[in-house]
Image (cartoon, rainbow, N blue to C red):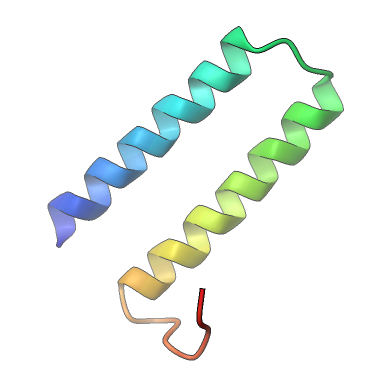
Length: 57
């Protein structure tokens, strides 16, 4: 379980880094994308750890 979470976090981080570095976008769009990805990852992490069991994502 813990290794699965770490692998997913690494993959998401690398994908976000690749998008930020190699896809040309406006700075505002990049920052919105980063915030959305971070919020989704935090919600997924809380649900994976069982701290957010009431929300069905």
